[in-house]
Amino acid sequence: MNLEICVDSVESAIAAAKGGAERCELCSALSEGGITPSVGLISAVRAAVNIELFVIIRPRGGDFVYSDREFKVMRNDILEAKARKVDGVVLGVLTDASTVDVAQMRLLIDEARPLQVTFHRAFDVCKDLDRALEDVIASGADRILTSGGKPDAMRGAASIAHLQEKAGNRIRIMAGGGIRVSNLRTIALKTGVHEVHTSLSNDAGTKLSDGGAELGTLQNPHKIFRVLEQDVRAFKSALDAIAAEAKLGAPVQ
Picture (cartoon, rainbow, N blue to C red):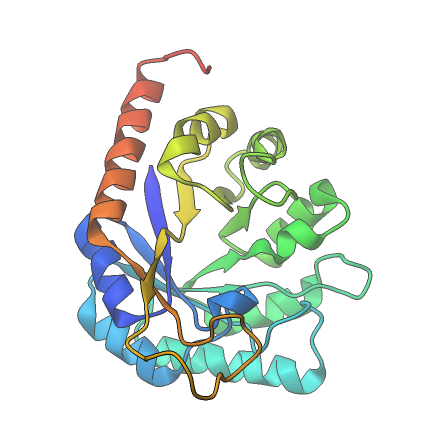
């Protein structure tokens, strides 16, 4: 079972790699759900880790319905990511009817090849997940990151299991959303997925003293978050144990 860690810094990417993750998803502005990182950050992370590196292609926070100008930005960002030798991109485009925009997705995926392409959790915004599954498959993406249309993968486990069964070998389903060591076994065994996505971010505080200007709209805008190697190692160890258990045919509880 493969582990993907969501990171927003070089330090977190290194921790993910040392902890045993197979892949990093690199984002900026995780408080916005992740937007495209700078080319400087992409280059630094690529130089620092040898595991698979995927980059989110999302020009802004908010919804996933993009203007022509925003779509052009996404195409250019894909080219910049490819030039920096990443292994994949993570993206998603919807229509204003909350369906997958197959035509635009095909254009972006054609631009991205031969990189792998993950359709991100814009999938969970779609009104009809069965239809969305078929649309993402038709677009040519390699995998879907999903919480089963629920706020987190624990509550969406039954839906993820349904998607996994319906997808068969046509596309990979990766579970994500609030997954921690404490609920990992339940989610993995109930869904049957072979890939898991998590952030494992810890509050690293701030070196700044109290007082002065606070930039942005967050309650604690100076606070930073880091992924810790020991947390990744513990999560990966638990994931490997679950994979071994599943191979032995242990009952799901």
